[in-house]
Image: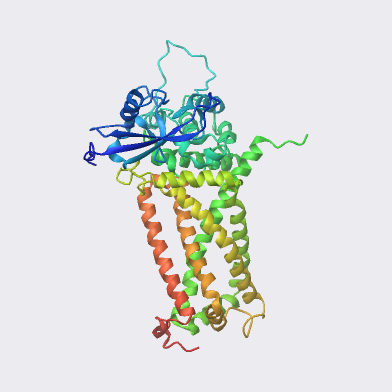
Length: 250
Length: 251
């Protein structure tokens, strides 16, 4: 696709959600800012411009500006997106910005994704489980290329929280592990170094808070800024749950 | 102690998921077969009556009605378990779905090459699946019970069984409207349901989502078109177009 860098001489209208939960005087409302579009303007550049020149109290998160840190997830016209890689030239004249739902609001567009992801990692025990003591001098165990590539594909998650915000199930069920949680399970379930077997995973995966809480809306897959193959992940977990139940019966 | 082990709960969840998807698959497959059977009216009343009598004489129709009723109810109970109970939660999902499908980024290529929709519409489609599902639950129950009485009792028509004359009289007396609504809802619900089922269990590894979506759309329009023609013939608006096959429309 050939990206346009700007649309001729546009005046952009930003409607931004404002609320500071720390301030008892503050009430949730939308505030409008106007801005001239410049070439290659991203939401990140636009928000900086607004904070510098129009309202220094505006809260939002950014760190890397290159879709690596996962700090700048926000709802851009209703779609969870990374502010740093969303160009205004792809958007209409009116741009509505909201904080990501599901996560705890810090203020305005800033949310606390950290607590959610930490809880998710604790629940899924998202680390390699091995009985044998680690020997730093031993040669690493070999892994075939396809397995390594599949693990790496799921490991590319930057924990921006866009998938969780886009997920209908996560929006109504607080306990649901969410797309990122299921992706984390798949990542360790397919890792041969992890000694947890199908039976260990079965109870976590096969539940209303696991893969069977997923309604199949596919929004997570469509909006993931890192283009993770999330639908493949759920297919893998569903088939794994089924095969593990069937193998135990036989 | 009266506790349920986590494994039992997990097995139960797996069973629910498999039965809700499996019953949906069977019902969708049945609906295509059903459309072909009802399509016999396109050859005229004689063809329709011959097929109906044959299915009843060999006791195929009677157990099928019972089995479909069971599948229909099982699917309604289990597929509806993911519909949020609170109105507030449903509104949240509706807002989310609307936002995703109207994000003003139609020109932006979707994140994934698998996605056939620009922008994402499946979240809204699911809400339509719930809505059509509710309509099917009401109108479909009515239809199955009515047909059950046709097949098993002498209440309607001149004999026990489905008859073209009774069916046409009903449709012409006003049942064309609920049947038309039922037709649109069933075809939509089934095709979107099959698309979702295929992607859920990972058919994406073999067929892209675009391909699955195309297949689903072709099936949707084919069976919807066929259904409309059948309904027009039953309503007496149109003569049976395939009557020449049986040498005329006479009974």
